[in-house]
Length: 179
Length: 200
Image (cartoon, rainbow over all chains, first blue to last red; front, side, top):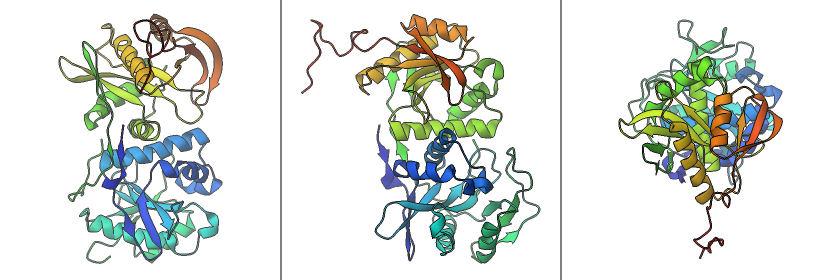
């Protein structure tokens, strides 16, 4: 069996390189997903559930042709966070999601820089016409980032049909011409 | 499978090349989009899937489907879709499974509704086991069976496996571990005079 990474896009920003989540990222991804910090995205996960989730992220790329990128700093292949386009089962539309895996690297604008690049890629290369971000109402940090990205609350949007997601708020990203 | 709503552009993708194996009546191949619905029907049917792991809804079934593809990417093996040659229909899954928390690689099998009683699980699992020994080079294999799943026990025994021990599975709870015959037991990796084959 062979896996062709060459087929997945790589996005470059001023400080970051974004590449598709793959086998290199599982150990750090599992570590992140088992932390209590992931409470706003369904965590913390058991190690077994975290591994399954990571495998599913790779499957997501194979199924859809898009998925979650990891964020790497210049000259370092280790992931410090994630950002990407998500459409797993139960999602009514494609989401732009993000997370910083290393708490010491929060607050430096990396998630914002990545989200802008992924959004431009989604609207450009993919030709998407709209994007949402699903956020837990208590996740003040993500809400602040959504607002800095120009998103507005979309009270009429459907939320993912998933257990435990009741109360999730939907931020709608600016349309391609306004982003 | 959720539609790619609003996605009209280029689809750049990650490509997995999963082998295609054959038996007299079956094709074993990598998962494809069209496999999701029959797989989902199985995973949501508690009566049929309790011994495998029933999923509570379509969203969870989708995650299992995606996880299996990622499992192939991470390990180089996973569950094949079994296709009934005559009609091309997906009729079950079989393959090697070893996610985080598993004691060691196991061989599993599932037959979809409407395809039972044809010996599909035996024929598919035997082929997958031979592939695992010949191509992956695995030295041993197990099957983890939930207590009370007598049909699976009967098939494991028909495949030559024997009960080894009970253990606590990270997802399934108490399971009975069956040990399969080794490659040597099955005459795999030995030439006609019984000595191990030399590989150049």
